[in-house]
Length: 95
Image (cartoon, rainbow, N blue to C red):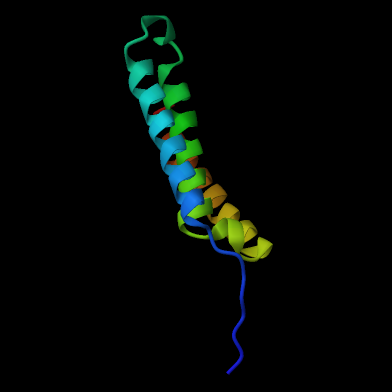
């Protein structure tokens, strides 16, 4: 039986990821209390949430270490989901 090997995250990678995710979460919590960001708060929080999503998918779902075509498939799925979401919001004039 042939075994295929590919890179896996090390424990150090998991610790670094945990620290980065905790730091981003701390910044998100801090943003809520900054009144100067009232007009762009939602966009900034969405950006940080998306960044955390990408980090989790890349590291914990091993997408960073798998075939590059898997990234394309995943990206197409996300893009399709966002497109459908935008169309539904536009249909109900929720923009």
